[in-house]
Amino acid sequence: MSIRTPLCDLFGIEHPVLLAPMAGVSGGALAAVVSRAGGLGLIGGGYGDADWLEREFDAAGDARIGVGFITWSLARQSHLLDLVLDRAPAALMLSFGDFKPFLPKIRDGQAKFIVQVQTLDQAREAVDAGVDAIVAQGTEAGGHGGTRATLPFVPAVVDIAKEIPVIAAGGIADGRGLAAALALGASGVLCGTAFFSSNESLANDNAKQAAVSGSGHDTERSSIFDIARGLDWPTGWNLRAMRNAFTRRWSADMDGLMQNLSEEQARFEAASAAGDTDVAAVIVGEAADLIRAIEPAQDTLHGMISQAEDRLWRIGRLADPIEED
Ligand SMILES: Cc1cc2nc3c(=O)[nH]c(=O)nc-3n(C[C@H](O)[C@H](O)[C@H](O)COP(=O)(O)O)c2cc1C
Image (cartoon, rainbow, N blue to C red; front, side, top):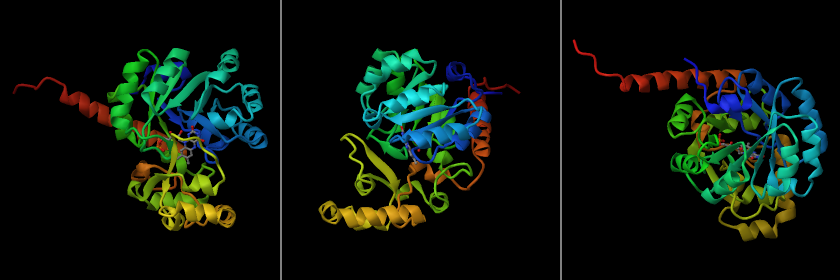
């Protein structure tokens, strides 16, 4: 049995699984491994850095990969869109902000256009714009996101998207999650947390280990790490990451954080460079419960596929007519 969906045809891939474009984590090597294993790897263009993007596209070699950007940040340096379109990515994904100004340029290229949404209004906007695929992201997700839970949000977006393939994201890190997403009407999944601790991820080794030892229960959404990183995120999204000494110190005292901002930002920056996870952000979602080893991304992907095949086969058996003796 193999799992083929319209998403496989859209992207020309074997398995309906996308690597999320995790800023600073999904580099060229990780994206390439996921693509070569039959999924589609997206480089995390994040807040945009031309040298970093060139390097990571080079690192992907001849693998067929895509790239994602944080839309409001791309709007401040839109030349980066030309840079990546010159690399002829298989897909371009935009999240968090108004994607419409970028549409004409994206339409001129060959990349399939994916938009990640957190509300039904955003989903309607993506449908009206005629995007190629919509990622419906639930609040369980690691990284930035909104408030809706994946389980009811995905089918609601499927109803709006009609024939446009919907990709479920947020809390999906194994074959059970993939099977569930397909049952909700999604055409595939986009996973970040599942690949955060892979060998090929650019995350700090201590952060990978903290994610493996941690649980979804240890994560929360807040703006503390954005303040510490000096990122002026628009309202409507905040960051899910693991709680640590830094968030415990400041979560009930945002005014105090603002008053000590320059020292705390310097402390945060030094901790991030040193891999001190008591202060630095370990950005994973509720699916941290399901991440149990630092392993090759190919093993994660293939494990997810074979578990989903097994689950779907078992579910199919439930629908078989009861055999008479
Ligand atoms: C470490 C990390 C960084 C992320 N960075 C980005 C980003 O730069 N752009 C983006 O669109 N989404 C980003 N995300 C969110 C993902 O696109 C995706 O929605 C999320 O990982 C799905 O949920 P999951 O983490 O439970 O798999 C990030 C997620 C993680 C875990």
